[in-house]
Image (cartoon, rainbow, N blue to C red; front, side, top):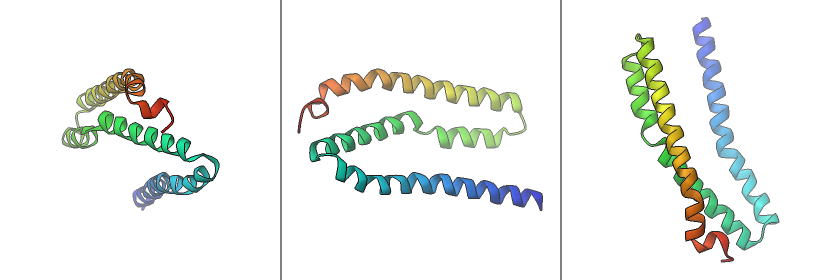
Length: 116
């Protein structure tokens, strides 16, 4: 009974988190549309799209491959710890690389630093 209660609690919090990730932008878009000019709003959406692209690069495949590996080796705690550390190190490396790439893209794409 206790395990079922914990699972339902986890499900509730994950649902709340994912729901808020969907609802916050829906609430924010009308507010931003009223306060920002068309040029500023288009720059905001372009930056948001670029940030989403970088996030896809950083997260690509790790959620599936690492989860599958950990599920297969869940009894070997040393191997699981090594895998988690490896995945986190790879994500940090990709994030730092993308952090170097962002200023380059900013200066190469005129729409980011000039009026559209």
